[in-house]
Length: 545
Ligand code: ADP
Ligand code: MG
Image 1 (cartoon, rainbow, N blue to C red):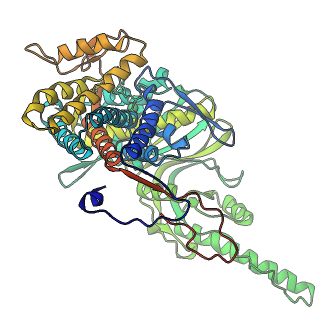
Image 2 (image 1 turned 60 degrees about the horizontal axis):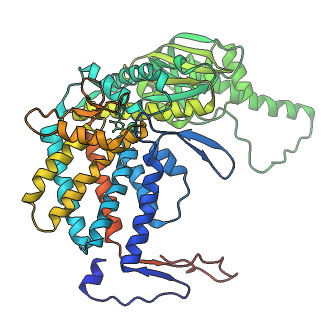
Image 3 (image 1 turned 180 degrees about the vertical axis):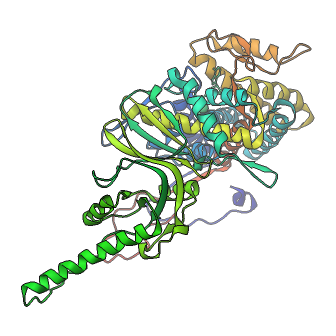
């Protein structure tokens, strides 16, 4: 740690604290982080294997998604946890490239170990890695990336297909890729001179039953709720929609209140009063002109009955996030008190309709005034299938959105990593000193991507790597050369439609370096033993960090 270099800190350790320092600390960290990288390495690429995860309750998840695997695996070691964090960051920022980031981080640590054995100080290694990733970022932007426009739909499709290439949805990925591209293109907007495609606007619902091929894009919002009363109309054309975020119920007091009833007429007047309240609610809805009510909270059965009598379609207990999406889609204002509802608060859609999907009914709001409202309804035989489809689709949606926002793509299949490795090796001597060794180690580490892709395909990785290096160097170099996963031989990735957003590559490299360097900088692990529950009256202070 830096502080150690500047002077010897005095550490006061609690009884029972374990301490591990210097080389042994760093060796144990590196080993733990590499173990995690090895777990996900065999899932990399279109031929990667799936993992079956079983949690303590016996529930299983079958996935090929790096971040899902790491989220579910219960890791104890702090350095391993850091690697899991990298996967999560990568997932949030890009939606793709999580396995790549983790595998590269593991490889950077492996190469660092070799340098540490040659007595090269961790500070030199981390500095070398930092210099290398900066140069790699520059190369990605200036020499490797290709500029594309949102109109280049074919390229967007290639990116979506590539992103889903390794997931368990192989047979349906063309359909899913088309849906992803169409969905994202619907929500693109200009803000100043920036193009934004915020995929959170796309509503994704899933329902098992049917097959993946039944997955569809819906021009509007799907709400996973049925109408509140069988007498309500099933379809409403020219819908005028009220969005309410409070219940249509008469508040029952928390404590049973006692009503002193002296004669039967009083019971009647009490009930009448309640009924009048319900009728008033329905009157307010009717007066506003609404023919559809979408409510975040409950609606009393009596109110549902009266609404049905008026021919008003109503759904209750709708998620808040759905209400917000509906507000944006239909132009409605979310109203709290139904008394205050006016015509100006209502949103518009051509059609509100209840339809059977699988075993249950859902509500479809289509033809909304805002054209940027779209849902994807995922179908699949079982829950495991719909879940994996959702994960793949989310990757594809984010990938398409990054390409639209940044407008830069690069070849996949290991082509980009090999090209960077070749270029960085040539550039390394200009760095000089011992950092040069770290830059070379970084270049070497990048080759783990084509290596693992090939190996996972069941091919001989050494031969392929030699072929790839040759193809990226010399007069006839083609920087798009990557691994053909059908043959294990070198091929032009651009021609094979294996294309990825540059953002995914850039972020994967920088997260990998960030975590590798963090692990390398640690030379002291101080771990307090798990504290036993503090004795009664022990007060706070039982834990420290
Ligand atoms: P990550 O979690 O890093 O996205 P994946 O398992 O999705 O990991 O694998 C991504 C890698 O697979 C990328 O390097 C990508 O270029 C490569 N890839 C995807 N499809 C193909 C393909 N058809 N041919 C070759 N490489 C591919
Ligand atoms: Mg991927």
